[in-house]
Amino acid sequence: MSETTMLEDLAQLKGDAPAPERVYEKKIDGQGRAYATGKRKDAVARVWVKQGPGKITVNGKDHAAYFARPVLQMILKQPLVIAMLAVPIVIQVYFNSGLAYLLNRKFGVAHCVAAPSALIGASNFFELAVAAAISLFGLHSGAALATVVGVLIEVPVMLSVVKIVNSSKGWYERGLPVSPRSRGA
Image 1 (cartoon, rainbow, N blue to C red):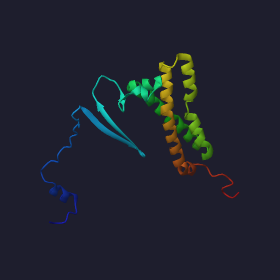
Image 2: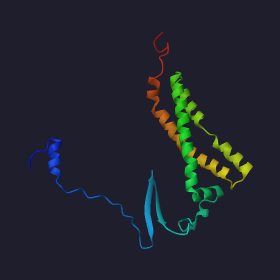
Image 3: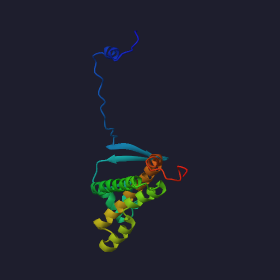
């Protein structure tokens, strides 16, 4: 067989047979269930999902045994509402923290001040909002649901902002003006 050195040579080797299409096939067991596994760090979640009347069970128990608070049960039962609440929060946190971080860089603020500034500027203080919503509108209200979702979404997003701000310290400091002290004056 001759050596292949050019792209044209590869085209000749290909042949006329089209590559078989990969078709995903649902794997349903005898009881009509689909199986999925999710992994994060050392934890593994194994899930069986099947079509049914809408009753959520975890390890054979009703979901209320694991999610005792009414707000958590509301979150489980309304995933689309949760997504509609979560997406704007994610956008707002990244936009506000990014804007604060870039403005601090533009105005020559030190990274040790700019990093907390970006976090404070992006925070929504949902913890206070939860208390206010529950006391004003009740535990089973949409306002309570929205504020709880806010807390659940904001915390991991803010942690990702911390990661971004910390990992971009070199980039941030390269854009700062040189102070007279650092020039030896």
